[in-house]
Image 1 (cartoon, protein in one colour):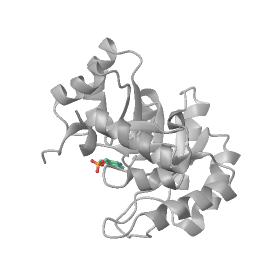
Image 2 (image 1 turned 60 degrees about the vertical axis):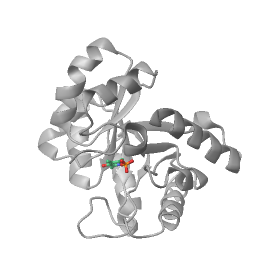
Image 3 (image 1 turned 135 degrees about the horizontal axis):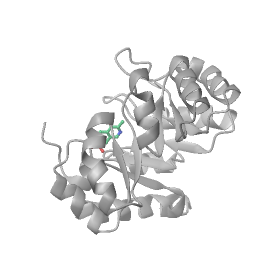
Length: 216
Ligand SMILES: *Cc1c(COP(=O)(O)O)cnc(C)c1O
């Protein structure tokens, strides 16, 4: 199945660059996928999944978590502040902290007693107007703001422009992470996770290569 191929692909990419595959987390992005495909990947033993919408994730994973309590869920889609509390209660990691207002909301909810998941700041490396993420020139400031709020920031995330060679975007994300002393790099999807691993990805978000093509 796709899971085995992607796992092997991650091992190959690590081998090429002298990295330990244990340093790369495969986030299997299960958004929109039929439940039987998700169950097959669970039965194969995989436990880390990504979703892009809070409510869809709750609907699918609340029952599945009853059966597989060690599942870890990562939010990889945009987060509105009015869904922040639900997301904090449900996800183990949020990859899409993309603006100061969201960081302040997460910190306030944490102060009110919510557990805060691991956080990644999303950087819009291609500066695409339609895409979420902070501009590269503003990334340091958002990282600093997260730290001043004592949020559990673990790294950066990016989605390179669809029409461009992704490696320069991965390299830019790594450079911003390095100068900010962040070790987590959420980058690489079905088409480019091997290139991302070559540039230091610690989390690859892979959907269709694991589960098959998404039906719209
Ligand atoms: C859907 C999605 C993915 C997975 O995309 P594939 O091309 O199917 O691997 C990764 N990251 C984000 C943010 C996504 O929305």
